[in-house]
Image 1: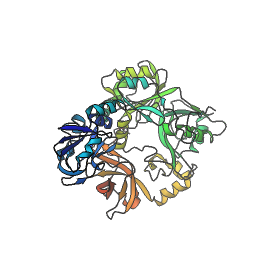
Image 2: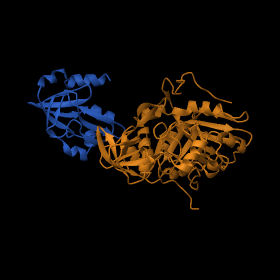
Image 3: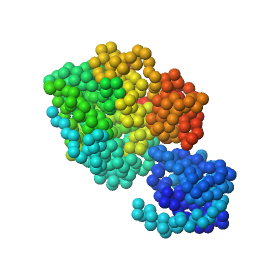
Length: 123
Length: 388
């Protein structure tokens, strides 16, 4: 598994052709208490940069963009009943969906963990 | 007359160009608060987290720094003169305001639109002085508006030397009593001088949470010491602007610039209770013709409570539609209600569709989410009112 990060504070963990999508610990800390999560339906086709999930805290709504193009093959439905998981375990149990990628070359522009850490440190 | 419109404020909005700090800025930072610009000030939006702070305020006592709000006094030869000067600008009965009491009102424009909402108090024994508390984002414009319309014998004095705290929640009264303030017998909207741990303050039993509580006006020089004294009580925790917003929203209380503004009248906003009988009959305030016509003939749109069926919050600006998908209004405040345990909103809808129980749709991310018009507040007020 290889983990990649975006400047919008999403992470994806790639195993083979499948990318698991979530938001980073930095993102959840900025949002504060998460009270609503909407995950995409299985079978939905998503394009790179498209709004794929929604996370809302008490204060703000935030869209989660997929950094890759593909088809949703799994969705973390239980998250809707336990949105606080996004605060508690953002880079683990609080994944939103798994996307079967059609163009793995899209990964090339994403950051690795070290680059993302440096990016966050500069904010 | 003391009015100051600072050069470091935007001349149109009155918002300072560089964020100001309240005297408690360092205390907030030391507590780990996340500071954000709000109405020209760097204010704490949250400390431990909005949900925990909200719950604590409803269960015990929450301490708020609201020093960004504007505090001022009007003074003149006697109560009647000062009261009549203010009554020319607001629709509340100020003449009939008893010593030691406070009233909620609105500065109105000539169309009956709301320039700002404010608290007006008459200190015990005061004959010829009224205290005002106005919104931070409006205060520069408010002061200019008021000062330009006062008779020569009534003066506006702006109290930038004073800070303002709020202690809100069911334990607030016991906290203050244990620190020597003799306020247990006070009613909602009573005001007066008091002493908290030896620090002189001016209190009102009121707030912006729907809970019992007090607003505490204190010298900016001594507010840091008062904050420390109050924070030492284990029942007290600091509350940021985030929970202040969710608390007032559940309480059905208006936020200026969202639920009320220059285009909404007190009648449309459901604030008719704040226009006492004599003023409705006599008029004599800006926009009185519009407002009296609305009282007699009804309004086209009304502020209502809205409860989405699902879990998705509907935010400020969300379009409200009827069964047929026709737009009937929009959300003016919306979010998650921690005490309600789900999304809550307020907004304006066509008066014919404003009855509680009316089914509506909220246009969120392109979908009409089912919702219902409900009566306000979402959480019953727990103000302290003595049995009559």
